[in-house]
Length: 209
Image (cartoon, rainbow, N blue to C red; front, side, top):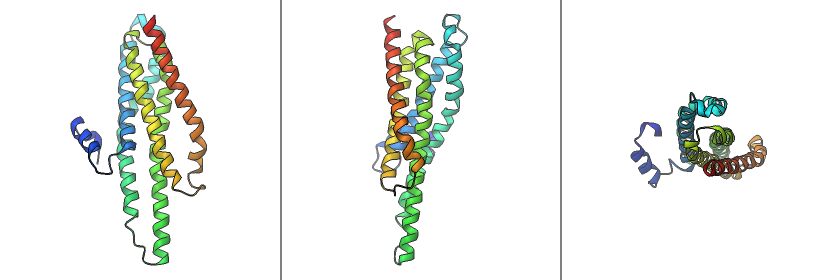
């Protein structure tokens, strides 16, 4: 299912339903798209305005990052729900013989790893966007600084929510699977936490000027 083809009301109804998909991973990817859209809006309100010339450089950087994410986030939302559906399908595989059980076990593990890799990509994109937003909040159009704040909250939610899905999938796998992902999680969490706080500080500072 391509969630981006739905109306907002239809998507919310699907998310609220008892169906396993869409779930939190899809919601995280959608949040990334919303964060990107808000960030682009602030950039558009900054670029070309002499009053905010100090913000032109960071606005251009953010746009280069955020514009592709408008479509990529939708692709990730679909990939996340598709990956979970594939995991569920593997549990229906035959398990009558030892060979059947081994094939089923391996298929479950491979699909579960894929289900961790998709939200990991969502988290990476969200983190990269989030790390640009403190400078946009500091130098961009001050009249839209709270929009940068909302964008950062959405990007933070996307990153943290996606990492929840990474971790829960990795927990069910042997330690040697997804090792590269496991090793990157601590530094990603710290970067997300630090950047989110920096944005909030910059937003507050601009509001008080």
